[in-house]
Length: 206
Image (cartoon, rainbow, N blue to C red):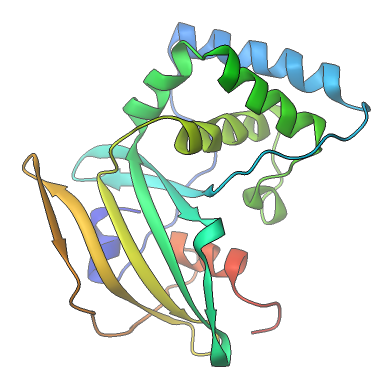
């Protein structure tokens, strides 16, 4: 998720959150209360959630949260996958958490009632607060209009453990830039954000 990722060397990330504001902390306390009151209740239909959190890092000195578009995964023959990813500035995500709308809180509550587990929970043991924060963060990506600092279409070869970018859209010096020139394939480094992404989207055993 760091800027070096786009030169082919994705870096590893931490799941834990960095310093939260008081208002952000209060939102998490409300979410924790919701989380514990809905445990054991009847399951309800899960709201559609497209963007899934898969890591965090730093782009040009700016902390970012990274997501992949779960509903937009294209599965090709020979375990090839095309998938959109995007990076959102962490400060913008945190700002949206400060004053959640009733609709936003209802979406988060519905996920807990449905027993929703984010993909990250399948590869990392999460505490209650980490689980809640990721669910809230994914809901921000789904429901709030945040301009991504980076968005790209990746093609992942699950068998060869390589990837390449097919399309890139980013904000550079305050201006939108894009290219649809495919890059050369690069090997996926172990313990990187994109290696974790591969675990989420590639068929088991590939």
